[in-house]
Length: 285
Ligand code: NDP
Figure 1 (spheres, helix red, strand yellow):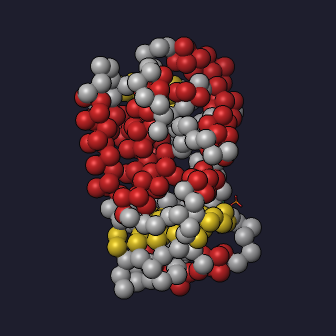
Figure 2 (spheres, rainbow, N blue to C red; figure 1 turned 180 degrees about the horizontal axis):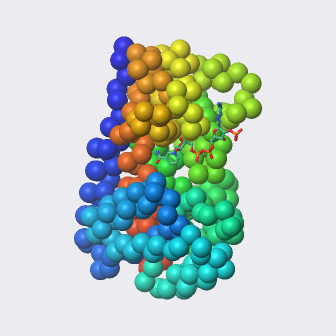
C-alpha cells in the first residue's frame, strides 16, 4: 500500500479562490495589517508571501516594517492605533520579536476581534472551552486538509506531537472538538513510538527533522507533517521520515507542499471572517 499524498498547494489554492469570490461580492475589501519588527530574513519572506496572497485574493494588505530598535512601548502604541482604526480588520504581528520586546505583552494588546493569528489569550481560551472564535492558522489549516482529503476524524484516535501555543495545543483542541480521541505528546512523553503506533491520525509539530520513523506509523494512518526544518545542505525537511512512512500511511502530507501553503490561506480566511464579524456581515465561522 502507498499513501495518498495530500496536496496542500491545491487545497490552499481552492480555498484562496473561494475567498476571492466571496470578497468580490462584498461591498468592501477586508484589510490586513502585518507588523514586522526587525530584519529577520525568514520572517521577511513569510510576510512578503502573506502580503502577496492577500492582495491576489482581493484584500487590502499593508506591511509596516519597524526597525529592530523599536521599543515595546512604541509597538504597543502602534497596535492600539490599529485596534482603534475602523478600516483595519486584521492585525498580525510577525513572530519572533526582538528579545527586548515581550511577546506576551504584544499578543495581549491586539484587539481579540482583529486577532487573525488567534494567539490572544481570549481566543485561545474560547477554543479551549469549545467556543472557537479566531483560531490559529496552522492547526485550522490542518483541519481543512483532513476534511478535503476525506479523512474520518470523529471517533478516530489522534496523536499530536508538540504542545506549542501556535500549533500543537490548538491542534489538540480542534481535533477534540471534531470528536477525535486525542493524545498530546511532547518531549517528556515516555514512549513516543508506542503512542504514535496507536494513532489513526498523527500530527507532528516538533521541529525535529525525521523524528517520526516509518515503523511508528500504523497501517493506513493519516500522517500530517507540520515540521519545516532547514537541513545543513539547504533542503527543507519535515518532522517525518517521509520515504519510510509512505508505504505504511493511508494519507500523508509532503514537506514542502503540505501544511505550509494552508497556513497563509487560512490567515486570509480568518481575516475575512474577522471583517464580516466586525462589520456585521456574518459571524466568525
Ligand atoms: P516549538 O519549538 O514551539 O514546539 C515544539 C514542540 O515539540 C514542543 O512542545 C516540544 O516539547 C515538542 N518536541 C520537541 N522535540 C520533541 C521530541 N524529540 N519528541 C517529542 N516532542 C518534541 O515549535 P512550533 O510548534 O512553533 O513548530 C513546530 C514545527 O512546525 C517547526 O518545525 C516549525 O517550523 C513548524 N511550523 C510550521 C508551520 C507551517 O506553516 N507549516 C507553522 C508553524 C510552525 P516540549 O513542550 O516538551 O518542549
